[in-house]
Image 1 (spheres, rainbow, N blue to C red):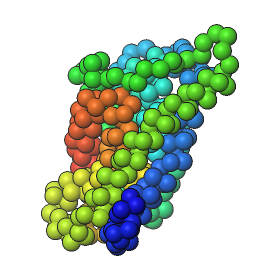
Image 2: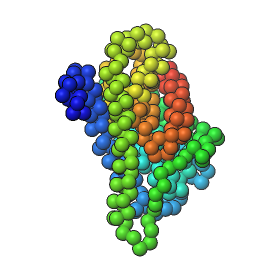
Image 3: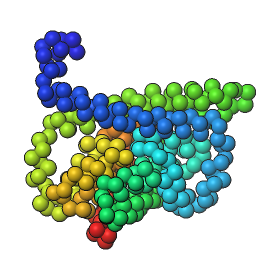
Image 4: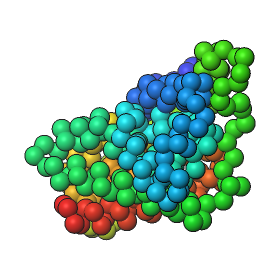
Amino acid sequence: MLLLARAGVLDRPAVQAWRTVCLAITVQALPFLILGTVLSGAINAFVPADLFTRVLPKRSALAVPVAGVAGAVLPGCECASVPVANSLIRRGVTPAAAFAFLLSAPAINPIVLTATAVAFPGNPAMVAARLVASLATAAVMGWLWLCFGKEKWLRPAVRHTGHQHGHSRWAEFRQGFQHDFLHAGGFLVLGAMAAATFNVAVPRSVLDAFSGSPWLSVLFLAGLAVLLAVCSEADAFVAASLTGFSPTARLAFMVVGPMVDLKLIALQAGTFGRAFAVRFSAATTVVAVAASALIGGALL
């Protein structure tokens, strides 16, 4: 870094833009990552081990949509949902239900839906389309995991979970929070660096080349959502600014982004394993694009 600074490389406009975007993504996501790891540590230390298994339906197929709807209670972005889903799995919740929660929480919570309504004033159909398409994607992915998911793809990091008799709950909370935050924080930075590289390297003229085709615009904005890694609380304003694209394409941007982006893929890989992240992210992208096209075509 010192050699690059002396050579003047760090002062070039492209490098300064990269640095700004990377820092912006990290700072934007960091509070919600802290929220998620605090919730994860609290679940680990203070919540009875059998609470979630008692609250959710016994049948896994019914637990999936219930967990998806429950995602509305977590006021955070995708960075917060990964450690919480990991804690749910460790407390006995079926992985399919935890993954439905992971996908729905950053997309349908009240903060995100309110931001969408503000970004698209006078267009309640866009808010409804985002809610329905996101819930449908979360439920379908949970059911797909029930049918085709394999335990060998899911390899969470090994650490103690749950309260141990004779130990301080606050100490367990601190240890759980510290482990999850340090573990996920590094992957968040890697994802932010990848997203910043795309922002700087791809010229804006590329956006205009895809806006004319209805199907290509949907696929392009879905891919753009993955690469830009905008926090779900802010992505509606980015989508609203893409006025050259169809409403369905902008819906796909808002449905795919909170469920599959570079920083989220990195967080999933670090938490659940690379084999899981690759398969789950690819399948989620396909399901989210299909749900956006269907719901957008019907409501928008």
